[in-house]
Image (cartoon, rainbow, N blue to C red; front, side, top):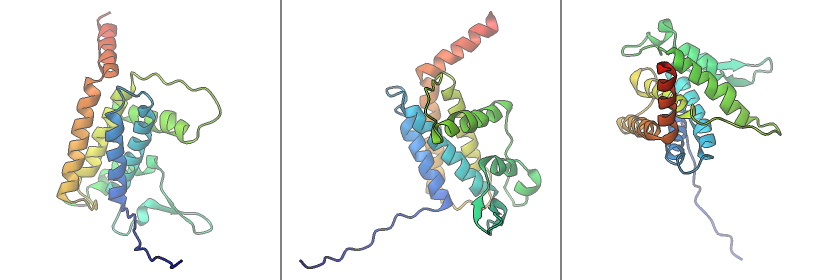
Length: 201
């Protein structure tokens, strides 16, 4: 049988398109959360990937040396997400370019990052043999906080992100549509009513 030649087909990502793909997936899974509760797992994993990716894009320098740590054997490792977010908050670093601004986090957003990373994503990513139950009502609020942070890092602070206008519009659209879905969700509405009843009690 004659050997058939095929043309190579490449899957290519940059730091920006990788982060944007995570955000796209988060938006898709957010649409499924009302009908499929398991979609929350993929929302969490996708939002973490998008947050980490856009934080790296926002805080890196032109040669990316500031986001790399080298082991004793010379192996390059990307800085952890906590370090990237910390750099994004440093005015002295983020304010070095015209139009760039440091990330300013509210207490709620700090809590949401902690919950996303340590309690939720890490347990899914490194799942131990166990039974694990997650109360759902707080997840829409966490997701909304993370989406706001992602939008700031991707389109509101101008550093070395290589995003064209179409990609920036897409990010804005995903964040806007996802937040609208989350705020209309049953879990979010019930959580808001519960908070109001506690305050008025």
